[in-house]
Image (cartoon, rainbow, N blue to C red; front, side, top):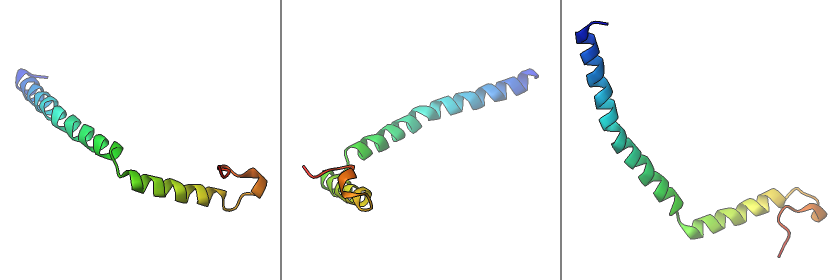
Length: 67
């Protein structure tokens, strides 16, 4: 590889590196938003999933027995 090609490659590598922190910050923000989700919605979803999973199981073999 000649020196011009090496310089061009180095410039591309540098631009990718400088773009990474923004991408990382965006990903971290999305993960935080996901973790901070609506608690009421999560409880409703879990309740629905429990019912759906136990629906077709024998009564003596429930995954989530009533408490």
